[in-house]
Image (cartoon, rainbow, N blue to C red; front, side, top):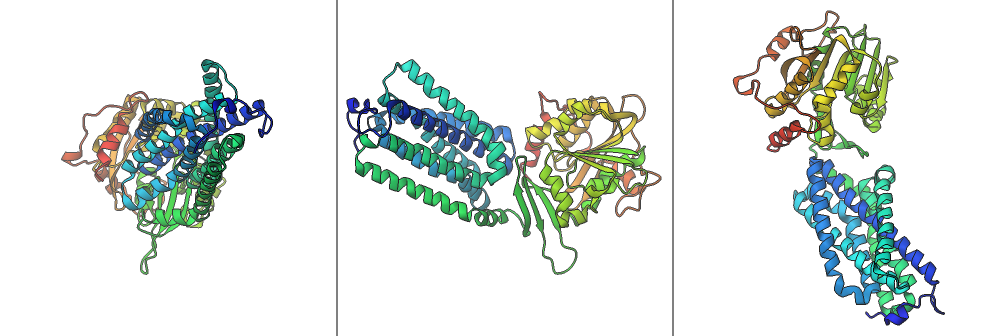
Amino acid sequence: MQDRTAAQDRTAAAPGSPVSSRGARVLLLFSVFLCAACGLVYELALTALGSYLIGNSVMQTSVVISVMVFAMGVGSLAAKPLQRRAVGAFAAVEAVLALVGGLSVLVLYLSFAWLRVYMPAMVVVSFVVGLLIGAEIPLLMTLLQRIRRQEAGSAVADMFAVDYIGALVGGLCFPLLLLPTFGQLKGALVVGAVNAVAGVVVVLWIFRRQTRRSVRTGLLIGVTAVLAVLGSVYVLADDIEVTARQQLYRDPIIHAETTPYQDIVVTRSTAFTGEPDTRLFLNGDLQFSSVDEYRYHEALVHPAMSGRHESVLILGGGDALALREVLRYDRVRKVTLVDLDPAMTRLARGFEPLSELNGHALADPRVTAVNADAFNWLRDARGRFDTVVIDFPDPDTAALAKLYSVEFYHLLKQVLKPDSRVVVQAGSPFFAPKSFWSVATTVGAAGYRTTEYQVDVPSFGNWGYVLAAPGTDGAAPALRLAGDAPRLRFLDDAVLRAATVFPLDRRPQKVRASTLMDPVVLEYTRHEWQNY
């Protein structure tokens, strides 16, 4: 492959050229814009996928960004010898980038589901994508100078201005357009196709008079093959995703979706005897089993309802199972449920296996469901509640850790009455004792009196809660059932008396309170659960 001489390269506006110099420059910069947007989407897709599959979003983001930035530097150096044949080299780089970037999410998902080598695969894919992105700028700079010579500083300014604007657009399109419309897997494939057209077809058309026909033909055949592969995978994507996802779960999947906030999966056993087991998983973590969820939710809700409970606030609990227990009290007049993900509350309201399990609780006229981040919602909340039930997933990500912070529990006070009672699901005292006692310590540090207790939930194991009341004066809140408590399947006063007794090896530990600036509960959780 060989381009023509530099003198010919500078005559894009000469007779026979497909576009004027100004038009060629605009088209090339538009190609830069699109390629930059695609590159950032690949980066965001890799970090989001890691957060969904592995958790530990800070680590996933750090690894992807650091590996990609390092690889971009290597790619820039590797592209130096290619500048003499910049048109063909850039087209080839973009074709390969479109293929690798478009398939990256699929490759990593399959690596996680079947091969269990996600982290090594992520590092390799991040490096290859970064290497190809790094090779773009030197080649694009050469092409821009061929259209019209200008001072190096001006050329760099033009190039990076368009590149950064493209990155901005790509960064906004990923959560606002691509994820809601296509999902992660298909979204990456669509971006790969855009990348192939922007990086190959546009550039080859601008410089078609300056590139040999055989080179153009070979590159166009190559990009056609890339588009064919991406298109074929797009058509098969749903079947591939279902097959791969099923490898991660014991029982058949009856519902699965990826939202901007999490990966939601519902499975159901096909047992020939006994009651089928419906299970909800968020980002791969079990949230409940229909066989024994009543144990978890009775222990969570009913001790807190022993005080006044005309008005109740539920934070988290988008499956509406805690809400079901709250609504069993006739004295309840108003319940506000705040859950981040509208897909979760929509599922709880309209997906029959789940809505039957929660007793169609979200259809109760006493209930107001709000889809919002609980931390931010509390900052603007004005009402006050008798009882607060906090049912968040375990704090294994930075986003969840802030909901287990001293600052969060301070915010909560503004919606409490002097005699309010609060209950927090706090994880497992057996599997994660430091995490459990850190939650209790954090609630206490925010100015609450606390009573810690535990029960056994077969699908979870030993599980713990913190019952709290605002203020530091007076006795800790008593663990008892309300006088108007409904008939329960698991919990009674005898069980509650035993629930406050912790074995010697799981009694209070010396741990730190968790704050926004020092989310120690996150580190405790990651460290303690990594072996289970």
